[in-house]
Amino acid sequence: MTGIRPTGKLHLGHYFGAVCNWVKLQEDYQSFFEIADVQALTDNFNDPEKVRTNVREVTIDLLSLGIDPKKSTIFVQSTIPEIAELTVYYSNLVTMARLYRNPTVKTEIKQKKALFGNTGESVTYGFVGYPVSQAADITAFEGACVPVGEDQLPLIEQTREIVHKFNSIYGETLTTPEPLLSSNPRIKGLDGNEKMGKSLGNAIYLSDSKEEIERKIMGAVTDTSKIRKDDPANPEVCMVYYYHKLLDNPNLETVCSECKNGARGCVACKKELIKVMTNFLDPIKEKRHYYELHPDEVDQILIKGSKYARTIAKNTMRKVRENMQIDYFKEEI
Image (cartoon, rainbow, N blue to C red):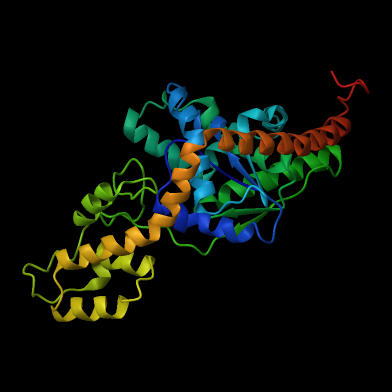
């Protein structure tokens, strides 16, 4: 069980940092991939059109990257009201002090205050409480394994605490999730930033045109100590070489040695990377183009996935209500 926020199209950082691992995991696990539109609204509540548009865009990206709806369930968070119900029940089990101590939440609040001033007025209840909603996401589908990066481990620990407290009060009801720590590194941006991100303007998107890819790669950061074309350089500080390695360029040894001995200029190296990048992205873009031309097929995948996901969530809620003693009537109302 894992999710992704529909706040924009996916880029290479999403693929190498997470999605390529999800594609492998779907071969061995019953997998649920949530398009987390409700969570996206916690800091995009004033721009619902952005979230709505990107639900389909992100789904298209996932399908293009190899998430197979015949093997996995792709669903939209807001179509599962049981998640919202669980969130309300869990909110009674978590103190505000505990939420503010969550390292992930603390970091994100700090970022918000840097953007909007140090008053704290920009931080909403929904934003602070999103780890509680995330716990509901995971447990509604009896998520036993949650693929995460190290920065998300505090969120899984909070879910485990909620499950333990709920089960200790109401009896064994919920599955305790285990983090499935990804070995995939965080992907650097073209500008050398440690993170490729939408807001940083340093990302290559799966949907980028050939012209956009060329422009971005030609502007990538190289070894700043290399002044002239024939100067030797250090490939390990060059973002162009970084992407040659990331995309497993079969010519990598030559790229490295020519860079070190001054036999390769940066422009030529960037042009080669454009070819390697194009070869990598073309099959993805071809699949993406197909789904762009067949939006009804994308919608049917989401409808089918959401219906199935809801049957699982309903079963979870039957147990939850029974053990909380709020199952007043046999007949569903």
